[in-house]
Length: 121
Image (cartoon, rainbow, N blue to C red):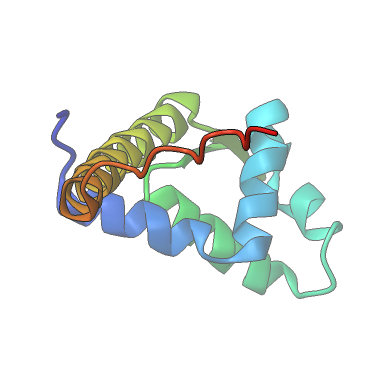
């Protein structure tokens, strides 16, 4: 199993726990956008959007760069793939545990009873 730093995983899931941040990430994975352009999509202040962008950046899910007076944001597809890989690995662990539980329950129940024979006239 691929080991991912727990602090990084915590930051990913914290960042992705908010619907606005998930929407911002979706947008900047498609195209690089300025923070002011992003802010026009939400009924909140520019400062609030900047804070959301900051959380995503600290989690490593987006990058920011200055171009003149604008701050442009871009999604980091590699980080998103790493987060998805972590979820896939966790799913595999749980599927294995469920399969073992199913095996234990089947073993305790014993063989299934034979179906009834058809009645003869």
